Image (cartoon, helix red, strand yellow):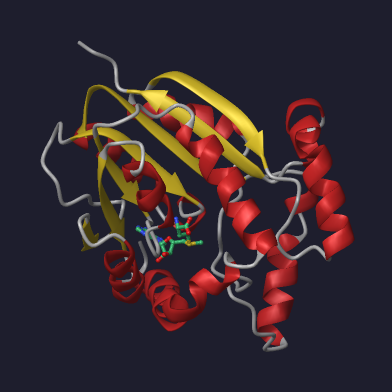
Length: 243
Ligand SMILES: C[S@@+](CC[C@H](N)C(=O)[O-])C[C@H]1O[C@@H](n2cnc3c(N)ncnc32)[C@H](O)[C@@H]1O
């Protein structure tokens, strides 16, 4: 990861760590995050040891350990990690990047990453590392920004917002990458994963005004399955083959 991009992301998340959870505290934020994390959870085993890359304040770790498993969170932001440790005192949290995972081979049954993959400068390095630390038969599940109709203009809006110094929790120009289906399939396959599955997630956006959000929420599952060009997060899972 180039130092400037890495530092900008890390400083940003360090600076908003104390208010990050407020974003997901009101009802829209909570249902938005719950919706994505439920989809992320679907391919994962119940129980076992999970590594959550870009764990932030530990929202997904908290959800996973309730299924009976144990979890380790990894994030480049020390302040986000501190919040996560406060949220889940019995879990392990480590500062570091998904491109160089500080664990030995075959350490985990599962890997998750929620809304972090698009920040990663070298996505193949993160997937190669994930493959290395997963046990044979282990599962990876990632949900990140998808390249779709509704997301085409977002980078330009973020750049403009940053120039105009508009304060928003995550709307900043970090040069995030928006992924399409074929790109994800070829990255997962190149890293060695089998059973690669892609689905689309999210139509109700956290920043929508209430009546629009409520409507979008009602039609969300229909949109995700039948009109996926309107959904804006992509979820991809794969399995490390058993030799
Ligand atoms: C939008 S937040 C998502 C946090 C959490 N997964 C959630 O669902 O609330 C993105 C997180 O990814 C982290 N991040 C960005 N690039 C990373 C990288 N290369 N390795 C690990 N974490 C990273 C950020 O520090 C931030 O905490």
